[in-house]
Length: 428
Image 1 (cartoon, rainbow, N blue to C red):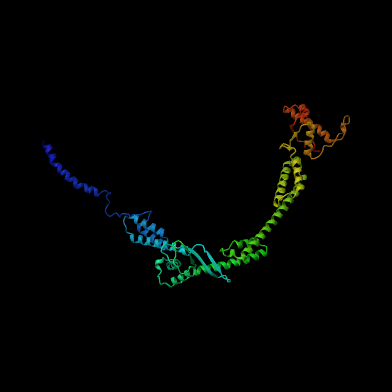
Image 2 (image 1 turned 30 degrees about the vertical axis):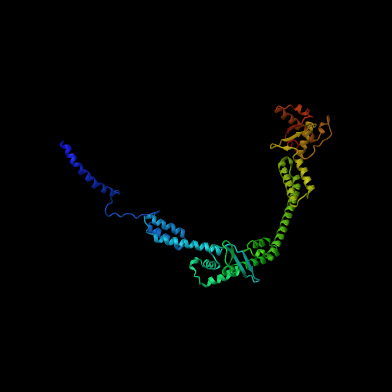
């Protein structure tokens, strides 16, 4: 009973002590720091808020307002609060001003020029572009905005009594008449003096290019004339009679040069064909058969190109000759090991087909003496070589399991023959 009584009495004291201790614990949520230790300054990307603010100021001075706005927002994010509210407001104000000026300049002083009239001396007599009328606009407000655009300032910064506004109003009324404007209509906007001067200078340079291009054509330099024609700065010179005449002359000269080049190419191709026909007989078929085929295919392609340059058939005799030679050259084939591949047609004997193939490889007929047994010793070298050739052909067929007798008797059959290399037999 005594212990329970003591606990009952002590409980209120514990509650009171806890109430005093909890706030202390809450206030000391951060770890305790030793006295005298410097607290590091907050940073973002390694820079303090002052450094970001300095970057923002430098960007604003350079006219990089988007970057300035980004930097000043970063400066504020380093340390929570609105310590750079003034700078942020000034940057935003400068950005709005720059946007208004850019829109005004783009609308009234940039874009294509719709109409230009040049004098005989090349100066601009009249020039204008067009702009669309916005709600609430008049020729007077347009005059004020035009002056502002030329000065790269907002329209609100140009005084209504400014002399330049009166001059701009005079120009606008000269082009459009004194009247009330309709929203959405297109009105003529005059060009500034500096623009008119630049147009006049470019026009003079373009006309000088026309004169120089004609001189180049007279000297036969078509490429230089074309280069000068392609360097026109403005489109106004292109509509002149002199430029149209230059275009016609340049087109004619270019066409003539192309015709000359095509003729030279045609002559070179035909000359290549002649050279090929001269070289073919000097290339032994037995050792350079594939080269002969390549040369003849090249000659056929050259003739085809030469005729295409002028259209129609220009070299029928040469084309027929090349076709005949190519047909003869592909009549039989020679393997890499010198063997001859021959197609024996129906009605032709084995010996006939073989003899034709051998004579084709040798590029000559086999000489015959007309002698026979018992005067075999008087036979020609070709006849003796032919006997050895057939004997070896029979032996080669037998080694491959082919009945040579059946080959000799297969007169009425079409057969693919593979014959020995004849060069080693008829070399002498």
